Length: 137
Image (tube, rainbow, N blue to C red):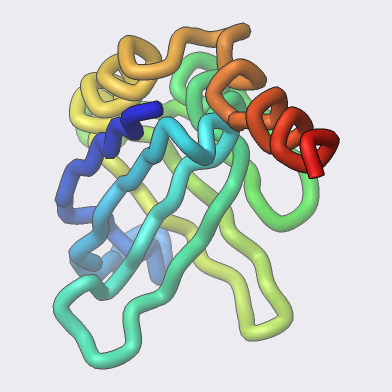
């Protein structure tokens, strides 16, 4: 089965305070062979990029309404009249609040949803083929 990769590089903002943020180069990634997950890599131009993986559905829902619990929370808002998506990430190493342009995130998500429509993810996991191979032995 062929696999589709959908990527998008964009600049996020790491929100340090209501008055201050710093740009963070990032890459959104999606693979049809890992259909339930999205991958976000921060600091893509550095020696030590930071990777986060979480449910695609969380980001899809977070573009429209607040969602998530625990380590990843996502919600839409407006900043200076622009639509943005905020992502609050929490780990033992620290917390981060990131701001992403809503239009760019939505366009990228639409491409992932065309690659693997919602509800069809399980068919992309290759479980049937793996089980067939296992039982053939």
